[in-house]
Image (cartoon, rainbow, N blue to C red; front, side):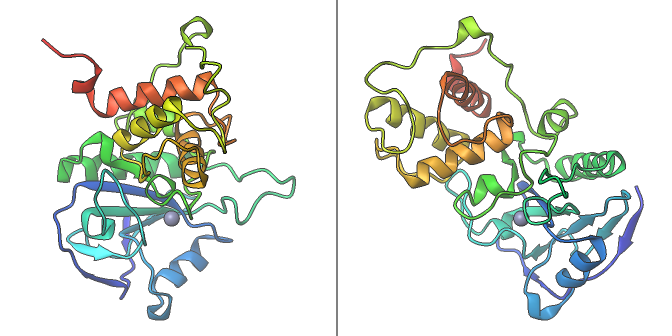
Length: 260
Ligand SMILES: [Zn+2]
């Protein structure tokens, strides 16, 4: 793994040990401009690493220091995630710099290989639990879209970075009850409460209110960007509903019905 030192002044002391990994895209034109911004004292942002499209890894902040990448965010009830995490910025235009046909710029193969290798080393070094490997949009669903619905989370999970639920067959999908359907903005009831409880169990910052409000819609979209990437609608159909249930069970295996 080739790592180039590129120190950033935007760092300070951690308040907690590392037990999270946060993945981002830069959302800028190219690698050099993102690197310049993260090394500019006035910008007040940084990350521990930046991985460029050619697979070259830059280290901006040592892992034992607190880099400034997560902002106001929360996961599994924890705040100050900059103090708890290692942050990787992956060079990609994302939703800010789209291709000329309006689509999201794909991540490059060498870049993905480099991010997987780097992530595995970080997870191993700090014994990071797989339910604490997150995207920026997971921990700040009200403001962030990165690393985006084009990020290959399924491959990452298959290679030990995060986890991925088995996709249900059509026949395994629970019909949403008449009373609760459709589960989207404005819905109320037990179905919404259960959904919010599952999303909270996964780690999402969400209030359990029984009302499908704007915060719920944003969290559902964050969930879909990660685990149901073909449908980032914020509407919970039977497939999204079942995937939320399955991810909640994977995040907390003990709640899925005992063990031997
Ligand atoms: Zn980010």
